[in-house]
Structure formats: C-alpha cells, structure tokens
Image (cartoon, rainbow, N blue to C red; front, side):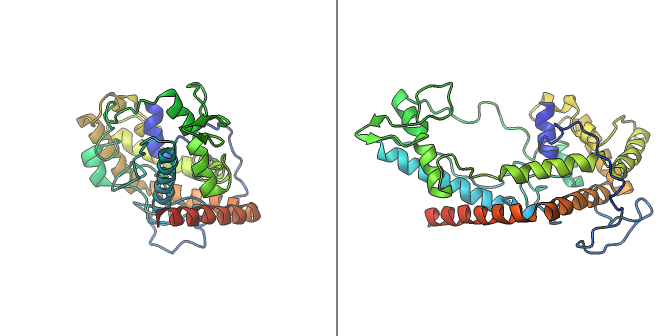
Length: 317
C-alpha cells in the first residue's frame, strides 16, 4: 500500500538506486520557462505553488488525459465488436472522468502527478488520499468467462497466460492472434502485440529524469529545508515523498485527522521553501536534456503515437 501511495505521488518511479553526478548541470531556470517572481527561499528558481499547468519537455511524447481516454475507449469498442462476432456480449467500460485517478489536483497535460498533491484545498479534505478516497475493494463486478469466451478474448484458455496465439475455431470463426485483444491492437497500431499506451521508451526516460531530479543536490537542499520546517511543526520526515508514503495513511479508505494535519503542514512548508519551484525546474532541465539527446527517436515515436490516435478517432467516429 505504501507503493500505491507513492504511485499517486510520482507513479512509483524510485526503482533506481543509482546516484547521479550533476556537476555539469547548471542551476539557472530553463530558458523555455516564463519568468516569474523569485523569493529568498530559492532565488534562482521560479516561485511555484502548483506546477500542474506547466508543460514539460517530454509531454509531447506522452499521452495526455484526453488522448489516453480516446485510445482506451476505441480499444474497448473494438474488443466488444470483435467479441460480438464470436457471439459474446462482452462489454468493457468506457473511460470517463479523470483517467489519472487523482481528481481536481491532477495535471491537465499529463497522466501523473509529478510533484505530488500541490493543493492546500486537497490537503485539508483528502490528505494524501486521492480525491474521494481509495476505491472500495469490492467496487467492480467480476466478469466470469467460459473457456471459449476466454479463448475468443485473449487467444488462449490457459488462465496462467495473458494471451495466446489463437487459431482455435469458435462459432465457425477462427480466433485471431492474441484473440480480440490482439485484433483491437492490430486495428490501432498495425500489430497484435502493439503498445496502445504510453511508449515504453518515453516512460523510461521520464522515470529516469524524475529519479535524477530527486537525487540532484539542489532538490536535496530544498527537501532539507522542507524537512526542517516540518520538524518545527512536530513531524519528522526526510522529504515530501516520505510524508506521502507514510504507511499509516494506507490503513483506511479515507484519510485520518492526523494525515490531514501532516498534509496541511506539508503544503505550508512547500510554500515557504518553494519546494515545487525548485523540484519542477530541476526535473525540467533533465527532461530537456533527454529530449535533445534522443530527438530522432522521439520524433519517430511521436509520429507513431499520432497515428494510433488517428486510428482511435476513426473507430469512435
């Protein structure tokens, strides 16, 4: 559950333990960023309370919430259509509302909360929980499938296998490679094994830059100031990640009063020390560097992603 909370914070990016040497990295604000007033807390960085409206260099190569919703809905429609051709009324729920699962504090241009919750309003009501609290464990009904239905859906009847080669005959029709799931992917990407989500390479770059960002001496320094501020309020945490990942918060579907008090203190200490301004700026630099170093590959990835989106829009029309 601790990792689930960190997923809401930074999409569980901290699997890498390598420390990064950053002596060549400058401390100035990225030139692509608009100038903003500065404070004595971090005079070389823009003062930010909330970075959700700030675009990041890797954003154009990742699906935003609306694009994610479009592809998800098209994929669901294609799978349902294919399953009907085998005689099964199999319906996948369409994506609606907030695909990030974060709520009103979610970024509008990307799928995850890079810097955790950045809203005092959210902290006062939900603490470190997502808006509405964690979903109930028994919230979604389980679809029970017959062996034949599973074959049509995934190309295999083996529950230990996610997908299979297909080729079986069901209701006088040959099951395609990887079943209807593969057929839907083929329609959207040209391949039964195609990826309809965010490109793995770009996700890897994003995780790498985020990990480097929290290891950066400038980020560590502002986290240290934040930690000292929290101690004055009676809370002992090394950084905002540790506060958000406190295992106590995972014990209930809704936040406790203590969790809310800590979350409110967290927001107060962020503002006093310009934590988001520094954290955002450092990560921005790493992302811009990653884009420059991988420009050709990223251009090809973006072209492919736009092709998948066009196919999804045709399906939905």
